Each structure stands twice: as structure tokens, then as C-alpha cells.
Image (tube, rainbow, N blue to C red):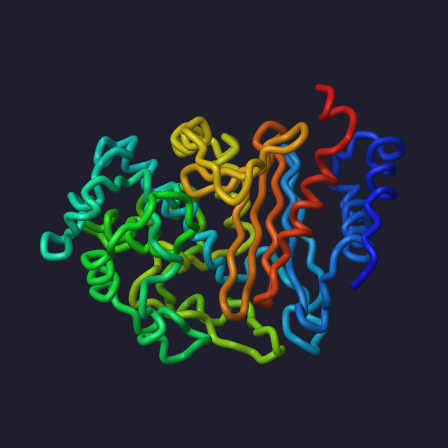
Length: 369
């Protein structure tokens, strides 16, 4: 394991570099600083993670940087339009759909789940559970349903054979334990069912109507259109074997979205009131709601986002992983800064993403402003 020595970088930021605002002419400076983080402060191995693209938002400026290679053993750089699976980051799209439907008066956080589930699958033992409980992982449901593995015919494609009927049968038969935080893909698979019940549309169509089209996110989708099949970035598993994208019979609302770095930047800007669309104010309301303690006292969850309450800034983030891709998004809304990392490996880049956020925020001007 590489030795981690974070003091030199921190001293550079605080005492030498001054305010770290990267103009177009400073993009090479940003790359050099990220190179230092990669060299001294992370364990990323380019033999296991061939490459990744990083997008950095710093107020009105956005930078895209390619590291490693898009295709293993070939020198091909990523571009901002390359499409990746984002896995669990899908959840913040789903929670955003819920916030839009709430704004339209079609649903409330306090609505019971049972009221939005087909009658034959309602569970009287779960009559107390609400939409808010699904959004904030408070149902006590497992990460994946019990006996999920019986339908998992191909480990590299876990959702290909697990149907919505299977999901609803699990819900109908579920016996609740103590209601507490448990991060669960199942919660957001059920929110997909709720959204379909409220709108009478499938997940792809309602996502297009409410978010993708209003924001002009042309490279974002759930169901694979033929026109995008050649744009998906190749993905590699932990052994370095090339793997195919996941397919879904259910759980699209939990892990089904594919998107590009450029489109994710657009989405994050809407979450920082920077898109100039009506979604800015709707999404802004997501960050003033109750936060629920998650993994420890410094971490909480609210409307699908994970919050790190630490030091001078509140970091809002999420990560995602599939068999061949991993993704990180994080933002500091107070400073209008954000980082996106999409990698062509299932190994995560969360540590790198958080350190880049620190790089562009931990300087005297922002801390004391």
C-alpha cells in the first residue's frame, strides 16, 4: 500500500497556493494537483482501473480531465460524452423525481407505501411505512430482497431475471424488524413502483419528461437505445475482464441510469441552483429537509443524498458501482463546487473524489469568507 502523506498537500493549499480558482489557463495546474493526489494520497492502481474521467465544477467554470485509458491496453482518452453506468447514483435521480411529484402535489412524503402498491401486494404489517422511509432508508428492508440470489443466474448481471412481480411478492411477505437506517437498493426499487403508480408511466419515460428533457441531458437514459450502444464506455471487472452493461427487469430506479460526465455536470448544477431552469428551486428544497443519521454521527442521509457534516463545509455525495463501472459525485453547495468521477472499473474512486473537493475548497478565502 502506498504511504499516505496528506500534510504536504494541505500546506500547499493553505499557505502557498492561496485561493484555488482554476481558470481555463490553469487547467494544467488542476491536473498537476490531481496527479499529486493520485501519486501520494490514493491507492488507485491503473492495472486494475484502466482509466476514468473527472469533471470539476468551480462556480462558473467546468473542467474535464481524462486519466488512464478508455480501452485497456490502448491509448484512448475519455471525453465528456462517454457514457457510463452510474449504479446507485441512480437513487438521486429517483429522489429528484419524487421531489418534482411532491411539488406538483401528486404525492407527499407522509403518504403510505401501501397506498401506492397494487392491492394484491399490500402488506398490512407495513401500514406505518411512508415514502419518506423509502427515500431515507428507514424501512429496515435488506439491501436486496430475501432469496434474491435464486433469480441471479449471472452474477455479472444481477437484475436481469428479478422481475417487478418478484419484488412486490417480497414486499407483501416482508416481516419488519426494528425501524432503523439500513442502506437498501430495495427501497428505491419500490420507489420506482410508486412513481409508476402515481404517473402511469414507466421509469424511463417519467425520467425523460421531468429531468432529462428539461435539462437537455441528451446522453442520459435507462433503457438502452440502439443509437447509444456504441457510446457506452467499456467496463472491466476486478480481474480485468471486460464485462457487459447490466440489464434490468426491475430495480431501474435504484441502479439503472446511464449518463455522461457532461450530463452529470448539468444535473449537479441544477442541484446547486445553477441551471437556470425551474428545477433549481425544486431541487433546492431537497437540502432543507430533515436529515437522518446513517453510518455514524458525521454521516446522514436526506432525499437520497449522503451528507458529510465535517469541518467548514457540508459535502453532499453519492457513489455507484456496477460490474464494470464505478462512479462518484460530490458537491459543496455553499461554494458551488462539485466533482464527478466515472471509471471503467468496478473499483471505486470515492477517496479521490473527496480529496479533489478538498483541493478546491480548503483555502483561506473560502474558509473565512
